[in-house]
Image (tube, rainbow, N blue to C red):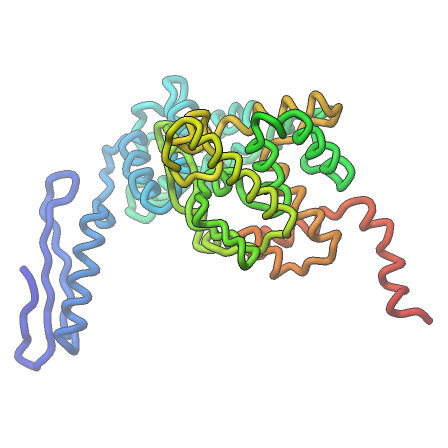
Length: 379
């Protein structure tokens, strides 16, 4: 085991390990040109062994065991909240006693799958996306030659259950609705809960995700340069517990520009918070948005309740907290922000996600399309 120099001057690396079925396995590579490359190959393979990449599927393996292995790898690549959603779907639907609990992979047939797909499509809007782990496991079973063909290749996917239509709910607000919402938030909370008004102002005028805003500290607010640094976020782990985590993706690490009015509102919140800390003889925790004890960050579930109260008093259609991010994006497009600027501001990893905002232009933008063109080509 380890690195050995060959007679021709090259290097051979041999690594042995025991897989999850207690069987001895070996990884070997010959004719590596340099010792540095040999050590790198050894290091990379050891890391893969520790991650379970070389663990072998068994023909007697149940879908439960296979999905557990897949989810273990998946949990290392995604946020805990994403992992939790995937596992919840699998546990509740795929591995239910009525369907595939303790069923061997080799026993799963296309007719069985078709029955499940017909059922799940009738109750789950995003069933095709949610079944991805199940499909990946069966694909690997084919690759390991445990089954001859993937039963997913022979099924028909029915149209999913229609998404619920909410008569009194919108995905984003227009300019007038946003102004009405923020005015009501100010009216309700300016005197004793100024941070609630400030939070919705920040969400609507920066496009931050809720978790990113709630994780902010005063050190992240750069008043001198009109910027806010985003390098963390509140999220939930696989057990639903609120944790301080990293942004959603690499693109989530960013420094966003902020208008002077929003910064002045943040500065006022800082003064209000400092006065409360002094009154209660407390030291600052550094968090911008806190609970009533002024020491811990505000709960990730609170903004939804605050928004519902404001909406009801303002007589506005309901909106999700994430809708303020969509509001920012839509109004930014209306104002002429280009796609690369918006992609950076929102922290989108994939520009296609940003382009989808441009695809859902507002009616005002549609109405002005002809005028925009003829203002340039005016002959």
